[in-house]
Image (cartoon, rainbow, N blue to C red):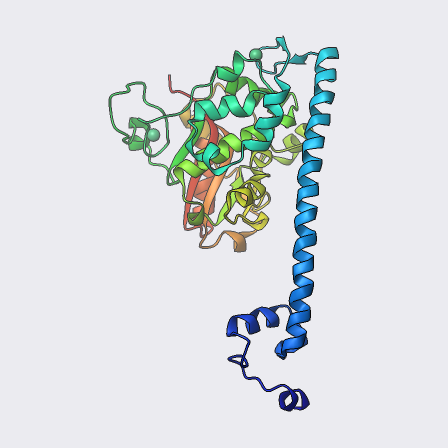
Amino acid sequence: MFMHSLFPFNNMGCCKCSPERIRQFKEKSYMDGYCFHPFYRVYDLFSLRVQKREKIKINQTEQKINHKNLLLYMGRSIISAVFPYKCPACGSFFKPDNHAAINSLNNTVTRNSILSAPAQLSFKLLMDRFLCPSCSQDFLAVESPVCSKCGIMFKSREVDDHICGECFDFPKYYGKARSSGLYERALMEVIHALKYRGRIELARPLGLLLFSTFMSHWDPQGIDLILPVPLHITRFRKRGFNQAFLLIRKWPAIAKKLGFMLSDRQISRDALVRNRNTGQQTGLDRTSRKKNMKNAFSLNRPELINGKRILLVDDVYTTGATVDECARILLHGGAKNVDVLTLAHTMRS
Ligand SMILES: [Zn+2]
Ligand SMILES: [Zn+2]
């Protein structure tokens, strides 16, 4: 009451303070919204000083980053001169372009580069540091015409997108599946290097490639939850990581850089679990794969799934038996819809 009488104000603001200033002041929790000008002025002066200090800090950080780049460049040059880099795709030794590598690492994640560059170019930009010049160009992007359901690329280039015979004869539970590239050549080799030889440094550029595919086929606002296809606990322990999770782990940071929200909570690696070690599916036909996958998954956190629009992420789409079984379980658990995104897609023989 005392403050009221000494400094007349109301919720709409006093003679000099706009409601916006009152709101800002309230948000800062200063004096519970009490408004009097000298305090504002002191506060403004203080915040100006803070802003100035922050600007200086930002400039210093930028300079530090440039110095860091120089040191990184020098370090990499020495290391690559002594230990030539081995291409994980073809095994040949090569000298990476350190300038390009550092620049591409710092500049790849921009709205323009990620959204406008064709997948072929994205792969080259992202993998320049990791692959030899020949392998970094040896990538086949999945491009239309594709099956509008499973996303398989049609051999004939003169048709529009349509449902393929397989999806027509055996309807899928998931909504649509899309992939970045064909499971051939360099992409197949780098996926093998990541999965079987533990080259986890490849997960970052491959995750970026996958993110650019996600952005070209989905509106991020239309996805509530992103789930990696889980590994069975014994395989997880043997491998030490789930490659599907490694691919999406950095997505919230990338999204933040591009200016939209994707929180860590939107990625759940334990909502879905694999109950059985289904073993390698290579060599099994479509029916055997489906049978092998039946009830291989279950929901660990059903409350997380209910009513959600889900994106399932995996490294390779072969027959789709794995992701379709996951989609079936998720839909049964109350998910609104399930879409699928994979890094690579096999061609049907
Ligand atoms: Zn190579
Ligand atoms: Zn299809």
